[in-house]
Length: 260
Image (cartoon, rainbow, N blue to C red; front, side, top):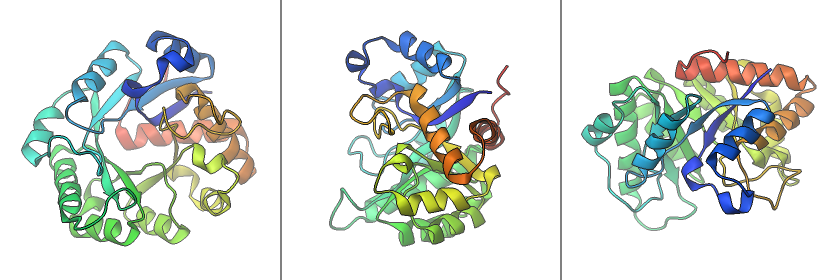
């Protein structure tokens, strides 16, 4: 039985608070059954570090993308295609829309999202989509740009059941983070019960969103087991079943090799 952390930011971990270096984080992950992880890019400026980490460890993969709230270099399709040309880059993102932290005319954010979808289709690499308080526009752009042609994952899902169902219809997977373990996440737990087993992923989004029972402590990939345990409990199935399903789903979506 092995787990996969489908979304983390290893370049941003609070290593001093965890009390170890990145090798130690990898050892903790292995001790807790986490055999692979996807280190996700949020801007172009720090992408070299993300890529470097993925090349230092055989069990780490990476993505290239610019977060909807990032104010660094604005990506173009050509630039993202160029940066994605590496065997360790298995996804485009994270991308999407975030209306929580941004105000005013957000057409620039919608255009950035379109650029990533076009890049994903051009490269054949799935999307990692972030959406916050922007369900209608996210779905509209996914449909307009043909995101169903390439698919991907709705990362750190916090949306409605209706949103989840529409994303599933577009061929996307739904990924749950530590938020699903939070006391006030009853509606999200209902979504976690309803998503088909062959379309669920799990993640830490480390260093953010530490799951219960580790709230208040630094997050890292080893803690994805708590997300798996919670989802298994909610669905009334074994932890092993969720671990196996989510790992198989990750490999199916991203085309990564089986865990040996």
